[in-house]
Length: 360
Image (cartoon, rainbow, N blue to C red; front, side):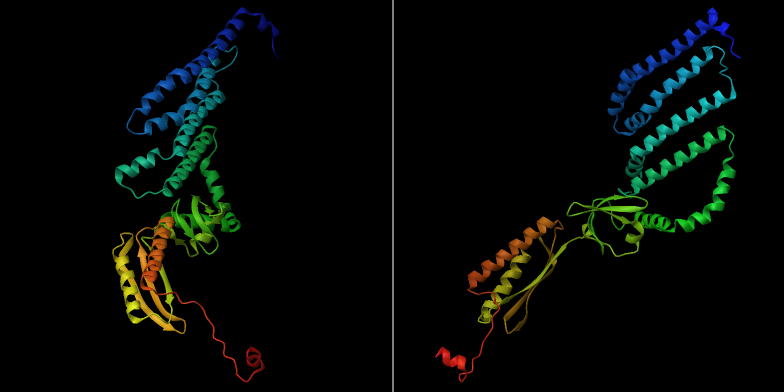
């Protein structure tokens, strides 16, 4: 039962005032830290050659600011009237707070990602692309969360080993219930390790064509050329054919055009020879494979095959090379006085028919 007489004691109000004053003092320290000290540290960090120190400061900014409140709470509790700051429960709360703030900062650092992974990639020349870095970042965040959770649980006396063993008993049932999700995770692992594509690549699958926008554990987001976002399960991508147009070393141009039947042999030879010479002297055309041949003829005329590869893989540049080739062919045909064969049809009329008599 509370003895109301304690509120009349001078010592009670002095201790309460000191406790509140200590807490308010740490609130002021928190404000000064955020406004001056942290801003100064951040300016100094930005002058360093790497961004690692800047990322560390930004990751721990909020945990440190909240840490000032809990430090103030800890010291103010020493003066709070009739409060036992040495109690086991209060000690556990304070210890757990330290774990939370430290884990919070490390979690933020892993989320910002990639200061550590980018630095390792540059120092050790690792072949880590834009897919692997987010993968390791998410894995590291999960590990930090798991370790922090286990440490806090241990602080309050929970046996983590028993908990993990209990999860093992239900693991089989969970695996059967979530087999589709597990297959997607396995597909994500296959995609990340084999790297058939990366973020920004132009890919084509049996179901969708577009640019890779994001790759996660379970699915991959593809933005189509109509600007729609399609989310594809990783298991589907890992088990199906994928054409990665971004990994092309060159682009193919291949077509036939047919000259009119009245084209002479000399005209035909000159046209084929000049097209071939034009392509061999074109810096945008890959020199290894250039084929310009009189391929075959039929009732329409003489068919010429043009087969080559462009050095560029950029779609707009590829179309530019193709357009210039087409214009060159038109120019050569005009120069030689040759014409493209047009579809035609001959009609034979029986002279004894009524239609022939009507024409007469």
